[in-house]
Image 1: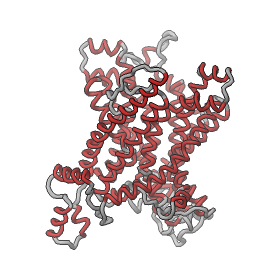
Image 2 (image 1 turned 180 degrees about the horizontal axis):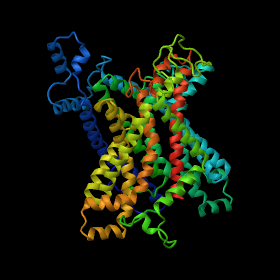
Image 3 (image 1 turned 45 degrees about the vertical axis):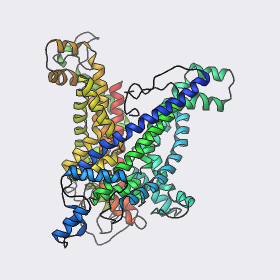
Image 4 (image 1 turned 30 degrees about the vertical axis):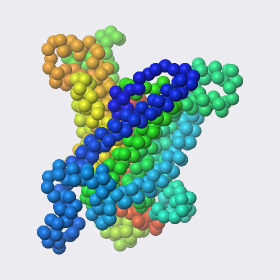
Amino acid sequence: MTALNPRDAVVPAPGRGFSALSERQNRVLVLVAKRLIQIPAVLLVVSILTFWLIQVVPGDPGREVLGQYATAAQVHQWDVQNGVTGSTLHHYLHWLGGFLTGSWGSSYTYSEPARGLVLGHLVNSMLLGGVAFVLLIPFALAFGAIQAYREGRRTDRAVTISLMTISAVPVFTIGAVLMLVFCVWLKIAPVQVGATGSFFYRVREVLIPAIALALSYLAVVARMVRTGALGPLMSPYYRTAVLKGVPPGQIVRRHVLRNALVPTLPLLGLYLGAFLCGDAVVETLFSYPGLGALLVEAAQHKDVLVLTDGVMVTGVVALLALLAADVGLILADPRIRFDNRQN
Amino acid sequence: MAVSIPSVSSTAAEGQSALQVAPVNAVSARRLLALLRRPTFVISAVIVLWWVFAAIFWHVLGFNPNALGAKTLAAPSWSDPFGTDELGRSVLARAMAGGDTALVIGPLGAILATALGGALGVIAGYFRGIVDTILMRIFDVLVVLPPIILLIVLVTGFGASTPSLIICIGVVFAPGIARIIRAAVLGEMGKGYVTSAKLQGESALRVMARELVPNIWPTLLIQITLSLASAILMTATLSFLGLGAQPPSSDWGLSISNNLGDIQIAWWTVLFPALAVASVVVSVQLIADNIKEVTSQ
């Protein structure tokens, strides 16, 4: 799923020393350039699918906003103003033109411009998701590495069983338990997480939701790191490095970690996108004004414009995160080629 | 290992040399026995069966999830083991009756996802070329959005009735299953029996339905069990987000979000439904893992 188009291949040209280095930079540039053409195409398809699906919604948005006491003429005027008259194709083109030029329409429920609403909530989500991601990575690497070093032994099995159990627990259960312990019984964190105050204050506030989010993804990432680390640990180059007396820290960094990252990075790209766009469940649980919670609310109130714009923004963030993961993949493993699908 | 020619019935192989494929019934009996020897499987199965039993027979057992009691927000006690909620309804009765939506929509959604994903995967793997490319491209677009966001869009489009929720769950999980089935079919396509069937002049539909599907059947069954836990979880998540079951349903996910406002004064109203969902999802996952391990032995 990282290679959206199998033919965006970069012609492999073997190089050594410095020429290999510069070639790698070229390949990053080529990948970025190709994706910059591809991403809008994918987004266009996403927008058509989303728009078509949401327009299936029965009901008159003008009537919904103005209430039952508005006259038919008022409803019609509102519909014309918001571009919801005529065919679905007409709506779509009206919306697409507006979206591309930055006028994203206004929210029916909030009565304010959708753009500020969506982007403001996206920033909140990015803070929560970013903190969760920063918490997730070191723990996943540590658990995965410990398991790989102790492969097949009791430690490995114990960590696997406990992580898999935690990951099967729904995130709202993890969140509710954490909320009970830290926010209700210990009273060291707020039950409802706001989005005001200084940066450090906000990071402290989102800590509990971020832990809940990171915990629910920990097992899968740790599992991937374990699988990735097992290969290098059994390889001749690892044994050689140990036997010739390379310091352990250097072995882990240069030989084990780098190879262990290769299978993990595409997964991390997918999760980074999901984290930064906001997890609807965690945000709803902690009443946090993030993009995921906003989309849920928009779906409940049939706030079509906010929903469509929000889904598009989610798509952009997710695709950019995938691109970042692919760039990371090229930097971690120069042998990686995106010329054939891995599945 | 599955029989490679469907016409060879399970009894035909009986009593033949050890190299022959073992009778299907004996194999499944041996696997069932191996499963029953695993404590995690037995405990998980008991938990799941308990919730299914509770969801079907709660009214027979004398529980009423909607009876308003005199004591509101009462702490757990002998008369109300799980306490009461803000309307005085017994949390235990609501937990007993609250599994119905998740336990209906989850399994049916998983079966639909497997049927849909299986069909598309077989078609993509059989025809390859342009059909394969188009299907895979569509799946690429579907995985761009996080699953829950895709689900929100689908539920907004199709509505929150039980049949439409089953369809939404099926559509969300189908692409992942289609990829796995496609890979399995690509592996089968190189084998002799497919070539012979084609040379015999069997139609594409017949080759897919009568030759390929029986051979990838174990993979399909495992996909149903593996997606079951996620499907139940997704159903509960949708109810939690207010996009599934609607009040006054005693659905677990809905109960959690409805009682969230009371968490500081009545933790039991949130904790027990949350634990109920978790027990089902973890158990189903463990059952799936056990089945997968036993069948791969």
